[in-house]
Amino acid sequence: MTIATFPPEPPPESSWKRYFGFCTDAKVIGIQYIVTAFFFFLIGGLLAMVIRGELITPAADLVDRSVYNGIYTMHGTIMLFLFIFPVLNGLNNLLIPTMIGAPDMAFPRLNAVAFWLVPVFGTILIASFFVPGGPAYAGWWSYPPVSLQNPAGHLFNGEGLWITAVALSGVSSIMGAINFVTTILRMRAPGMSLTRMPVFCWTAFAAQSLQLIGLPALTGGAIMLLMDLNFGTSFYRAEGGGDPVLYQHFFWFYSHPAVYVIILPVFGVFSELFPVYSRKPLFGYLYVAFASFIIVGLGLIVWVHHFFTSGVAQWMRNLFMVTTMLIAVPTGVKVFAWLGTLWGGKLRLTTPMLFCLGGLFNFVFAGITGIMLATVPIDIHVSNTYFVVGHFHYVIYGAAVMGIFAAIYHWFPKFTGRMPYEGLGKLHCLLTFVGANLNFLPMHPLGLMGMPRRVSSYDPEFTFWNVIASLGAFLLGVSIIPFLLNMVSSWIRGPKATHNPWNAIGLEWLLPSPPPEDNFGEEVPTVIARPYGYGSGEPLVEHQAELERKLVLQEAGQ
Image 1 (cartoon, rainbow, N blue to C red):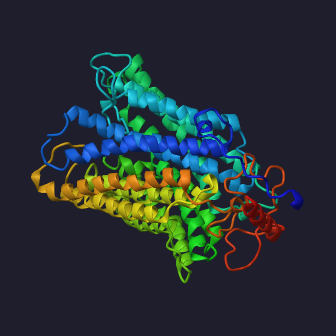
Image 2 (image 1 turned 180 degrees about the vertical axis):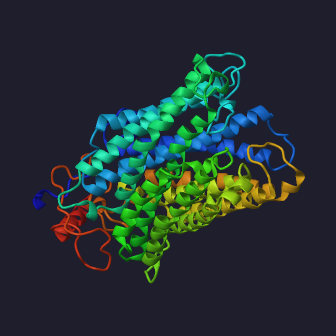
Image 3 (image 1 turned 90 degrees about the vertical axis):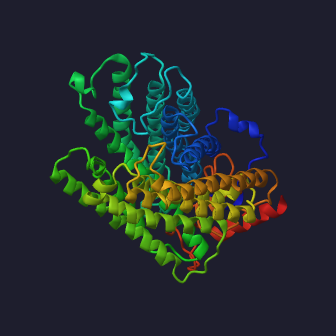
């Protein structure tokens, strides 16, 4: 690259209207993904408040039972397909090109189409709640024969619209996965071999590879379910020669690996942030990177642990119990690497770091209960109880969502040019951590006591723990207020950010804040070292000192 022309000019102040139109800039699409995801997050969260409001008393006295079934179905579906997958795609759009030195995604228009499918299937999903015949009420997994019931015979019924939305979600995610994998494999900066690539890109690569392998199964399975429901086929109808368990295979072949699609990028966030805020290199970098693909391989052969109560053969129970437990090995490699990174480091307890530490704590707890559920006798005992619900929410909200918040706070200055307010951020972290544990921890004793999931009324002996869980849920609802206030106010009037406010190492921190439209353009620095060189004094790229000096001079002249 030509040093004389570096750094690229930061983009001029742009109108907020650009985020509401069709744009092929990955950074704009990334923010579109994140904002859209949090819009649906608020809807899914309000539904969760209704669920926990119903469960604060033993009697079903808040909403009708059929409405309750529709609400928990919609809550789970919105949170997974309209919040967590889109928000992760948003982070991928923001981070992958800037971390590897690419000007944009490999297929910018495909990237934009993948995003614009999100509000389309989101609208269809929400509409399913209001059509004649009632909403979808078969849960986010939508097992037949419950999901094949359409007594009124409406062509446009709640379940049918729900299935259509899920299938479109699959198409959108496959488009995104093709883009992310191609970008990582074909558009890295000069000198950035795979063994010099940031761990976040490794985990995104692994997660999106899982999408490409597993998601077609769910999408195809959903289309067959729609045909059974509306067009008289019998893929899953037992009375027509079909097999309802076949759908379970299609669903869980993807939907359990989907947990790793969610958590792997969060592992990447932990791996990026712990070195920054402990001022130490990432311990065992290559082991952490390669462990991501070991998780992918094992994650594809664990889905039958959801079938332990479905009449599968004992040899299958034993086999999938072992494969499920083996995932603890590469996951443990990552956890011990993070602990090795933190050990003896100069810890800075900023908001992103606090969210990472809280997310790591919750994940370790979730991992312990996951090993318990992998064990056949325990799984059979607590199957379809609140123990499973508690475990799942510890993984998804306690670990993954806290990791997502950490990423947003950490990279917010880079992509907005403004610093978030630290006081509001720490308040948000405290309320989230306390609320999550108050909400999800009581579900474990409830499950061990035998409280079934998916019920709106229960035996009074379960009241105490349900009250605690509901109070925790309401606290989680309150926790989002300081987050939204922080994001909006800091973007409008927060302190201006320098190019590297956290003193981090990475290509994205060698760009102005916010980065220009094509990032480095054609003048991408040549990478000469592995990432995470904290304390070594070793430059990441050629002429790094000169590049950083010019960035500082540019900021001083603004």
